[in-house]
Length: 212
Image (cartoon, rainbow, N blue to C red; front, side):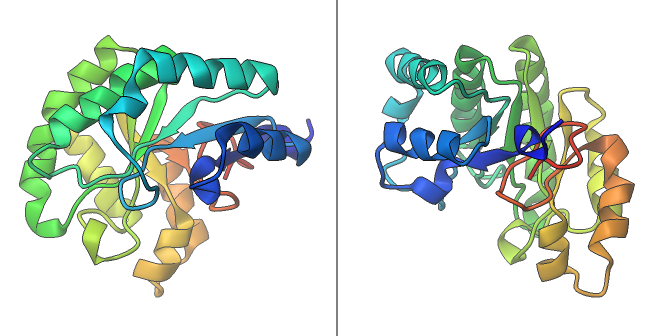
């Protein structure tokens, strides 16, 4: 299989540009998959109207027009913020409309990890009801350092203990947050507990060693 068929490009890199033009460029590159970005702090003009039925229909039509697929949604946010449950439920519903299973998100600061766990215990059953999996990314900076190492990430997954919560492990974040650790060794530890983001283009696909 051509490895380009196992890559996805996150639309955050096209922020501010027309979505049709962005998808046309992705297709021209020979990549078959896209991860729509609704990441707080990464994209502008992020408001609730983007999660409407009409916007979902528009994105589905664009995917069809350019013969592209999607299995993941970029949903980075502080998962321990006061509005996290409401905001993430909105993204779960939107993902279901798109036929997307995996929602990639960050965690929070270490001092708010108890709130994070409480929120995930609420969101995990909700994600399961809608056929989705919440994929938690290991942090690359102090804003999302609730989990950094593979061991910490696995411990959190074990604590939640729900099939709708997995890892979206980013070896690139290991380089920035834990320079004393091997990103390859960390990724190998994390693989059985979810998905691995190989930071090639900024997204992830389960079981896909060339997905980035």
